[in-house]
Image (cartoon, rainbow, N blue to C red; front, top):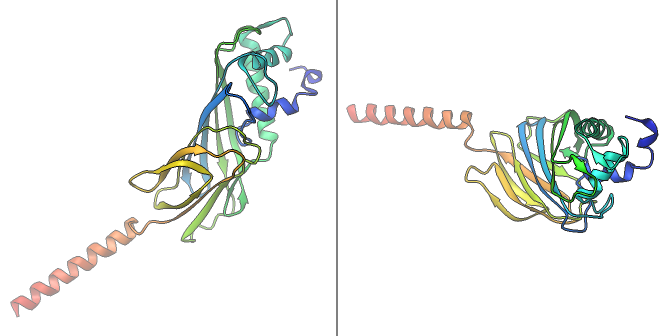
Length: 239
């Protein structure tokens, strides 16, 4: 990647970062995002974005604009090649890793563990307006999370988010969702661990989840108590 070509496109890159949700005011950009907790301190974030249409800018990205940007960082000949797409993917991963992550657990800011970006259907003429798909995946780690707490608060800061997209968040095993803000049309799964819905423009997402009463340890206590009561009742009948 040419260092000189990187100058002046930092603003344009903001709409593609995983932890800074793309800024958009037109219908050219849509997508979805899922958050899956592996544990209290680790979460996998997966996003799929669809770019389409003509014209656009760094704040109103279209597929034509994205192709022009990829080509600009390449040889600027009006054609996007597979190698230019690969270079752009690598560049986006590097830029994303340098950004401050906008996810928090109990007030602790997350840190990137890994970042992977894949762009599909971008090759060809820069004037092509066919849809481009961008898939992004990152693992985020939270340090100093107190596992002994009965409840936790997960927050995604999205004050620059001005478009609505589909959102899915699954909290760790052994916990259930208590309250949710920043998501419209929300639905919570039967096990209480997953919330789905749509983001609200310019609004942070915040989820409070609590330790489940139905955890394995609690269930075991109930079983032991039930057996003890049964044995006591049977002994009383014999007497």
